[in-house]
Image (cartoon, rainbow, N blue to C red; front, side, top):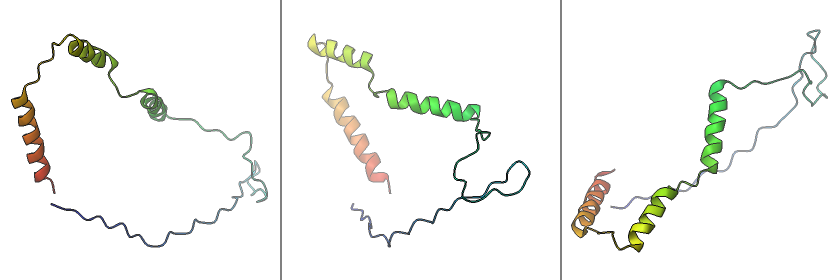
Length: 105
């Protein structure tokens, strides 16, 4: 089974021009477009869901993805010669994997 991936892509689109937006002042009239800094009264508040997402993202970035306890246990078992590999079980799982991969489109 072979799959061809077409990597030809049309020309890149040019980025949209950026221009400052006039914000109304406290009287309701638009401020001059030369003002590029936000007023000090502008603020933003994150929802609880957004905060939770930030915390989750931080934990994922700090996590190595390796279960150090399990690695230490496997090292101990290997060092003591207690690990018994079952060739039939390994072959069976490889056959299952090959079969499932051949069934995917």
